[in-house]
Length: 325
Image (tube, rainbow, N blue to C red):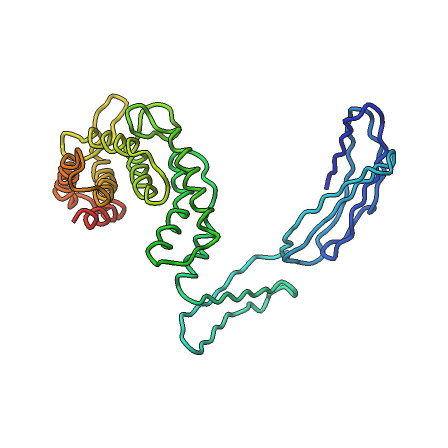
């Protein structure tokens, strides 16, 4: 393990390094080293070690003492997980039960000594299981428009679950709302002047990204403040992109419609618009245009869906229909 010591002072420094002995490792070099670091320069020392046994929560500490100044010292400690020198095998068993139950797992005969670990998790109900899973994938929004929305969706799902099941206040609530607000602010950077959304906020908006953004914004508006003009502009842009055939399609570099994309894109856009309609008031402006756009989209894939055997196309069509009906 190479260790670099930098000296930002205007005179040389004599530094002592101490590599702490830990139960998980066997040190192959000296535990300590003395190095002299020239002014404005750096020096390196290498400590050699070998993992001696697996450990779930191992740690390693390195301490530096400045021998040129008795008051200056520092240390760094890293947490590690040391795996056994073999092929990792994971097995699990689960059960939904009232009263008594039993679980069994098979441990291979060739399992390395000291490498077997077991973890038991008991949930009081299925909602607790779901909330634990959501917390595990909840993360700060990042990346392009699609990644920003996808990384924020677990936070949205948590808030939707909490509201629908009337769950008690949780520490996850504030975190989820914070991530939604971050995602919304980041998503606005990918919004084009026309109202649609592009992957990186450069160039032409994309149908799938704009439909995804519309769905996210309409659902998130239930929990955070979302500018209704942003939602309306995205909706309007999507409705303006209807192909002459009645559905939605990608275009090539010459502006020609690519009919091969018609089924899955139409189904995806129809689902986003239908979800949006469910949250609108019946007398809102331009709602009739949205309804008609959805009807046209359904008519399009109702006419053409028999021509495909693609499971992805069929699944999107199946998902789109119930939201409008």
